[in-house]
Length: 619
Image (cartoon, rainbow, N blue to C red; front, side, top):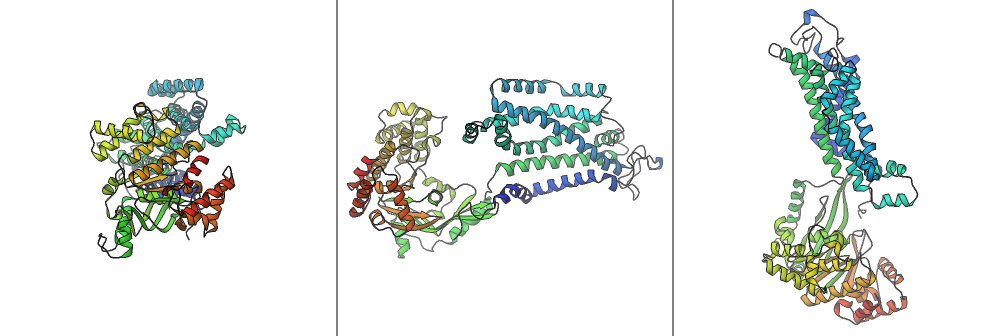
C-alpha cells in the first residue's frame, strides 16, 4: 500500500533541494544559472586565465583585429581586449555586490521594523523611502563622484542607497501579510521578544522575495555601473565593461568590434540575471509541483482508455447497470499528488456508489482520503493533484468521458456542494444576494428578477427569517450558522440531484450543528437528492446517514448500512471511531441506547427513524 502524502518524503530533501532542483529542471533557469556561474568563475580566476596584464600597452596591437595573439583584438591604446574584459568581470561583479549589500542592509531591517511595528515606525520609514525615490539620483552620484575623486566603491554604495526603497517596500508588504498570523501571536504569548520573533519567525517569510529581488537588482546595478563608467564617472583607466564601451563608442564607425565585445558581456550577464530572477519567482511562488497541460491530457487519455466499449443505458453488464442506476458511482478511483520526490498516491483504488435519494456518509480520521475522494468527484483537485479511475458515473453518465468544460457544467446543476468553514467560502467583497443570484443567472440562465425570487425562496427554506435583509448583508455581518445556511441555500438553489457536504458542521457549535443536520435531512427528503456527507464524527453518521463508508489511509475499511455498522463493526478501526464518538457524548449510556436503536431500526435518521430525534435533542 502506498504511504500517505506526507510519508516517503524526506523533509530535508524538500527543504534543501526542491527549489534548486525545480529551477534546474527549467531550461531558462538552468541556462541562466550556468551563465552566471561561468561569469563568477571568470572573475575569480582572472589572474590565472587572463592572457596579459589588462593595462599592458603594446602600440603594435592598437586597434588590432582578433588574432591568435589577441583573441578579441587590441583597443585604441594597444591593450589586449580579452584581458580587459576578464578583469572587468571582477569590478563589475564587485560593484553589483556592493550595491546589493548596501540596499539589503538598509532596506530589509527597516522594512521589517516598519511592517512589524506599524504606527509611527511605519510612517517614518515610508516617508524616508518615498523621499529617497523623489531625489534625482544622477545629481547625487555626480556630487559624490566629484567629492570623492571618482571612488568606485563609494559610488556603488550610493547606488545601493537609492535601491534600498525597493527592498524596504518588498519586506514591509511581506511582513504586513504575516505579522498577525496565529504562529506569531503564539510566539508573543510564549514570551519571546519582538527581536527574536522577527529574527526567527518573520524574517523567514522574506528570504524568497529577497533572493528574487536581488537577482533582478544585480542586473540593474550592473547597468547603472556601466552607465557611470560610460560617462567617465568611476575611473576611466579602470578595466570595467562600461569604460570599454565608452572607448568602443568613440570609434564604433571604424572599429565596431571594440563596442561589440563589452556590450555582449554586459548584455548576456544582465539578461541571465533577469531570466534567473523571473524563473526563481515562478519556482518559489509554486511551492507544490503542478501538472503541465500535456500531463493532464495524458491522464485524461488514460482515463478514456479505461472506459468500457459500451456505456449506454441498455448495457447488460452488472457494473454498467449499477452505474446507470446510481446517482454517483466511483470505480477504481486513485488520487495522486506531484511532490518534489515524485508522485504520491493518497487514495488507493476505491469503488463506491450512492443510490438516488440515499444518504451516504464517508467517515474517517483526518488524512484518510475523504475530501480527496469528493474533490475527485467534483473535479476540484488542486493543480498538483490528479485522479485516475475506470469510471466516475454521475446521473447515469461517465463524466470521465466529458471535456473539462462539459464537466464544469455539472457543478451547480447536477451536483451541489457545501464546503467546510462557511466564513472563508463567501466572498467578503460582495453581498449575499449577489453571491446567490450570480450562479443562477450564469449557470441556469435566469433573469435578474427570477434569480432574486429563487434566492429569497431558498433563504426562507433554509430557515432564515429575514431573507431580504440577509440578501443585502455582507458575509462579515452574519453568524457562522447563518453563513452555513446561506451556503446550503446556494447549493440547493439549482435543485441538484446530488448534494455533497464536506464536513458541514466542523466550524459550528453543538446547537447549530444539530440545526444544520436537521435542515440537511429535511432538504434531502424534500428534493429526493442523493446526499454524500463527509465527516469524522460517527454521531453525525447515526443522526442522518443510511449507509456509511469507513476510510483509512486512502482505502476503504468497510461499507455497510448504519445499523449493522454500529451493531457489529467488522474493523477494529471502525470500533475505535465509534468509541471516540461515544467518549465525546455527555451520557455514554444514552448514546449507546440511541445507537442500539439505530441498529435495530436498520438505518440512521436519514430514513426517518425515531433515533434521529433523540440524537438531535442530545446535540
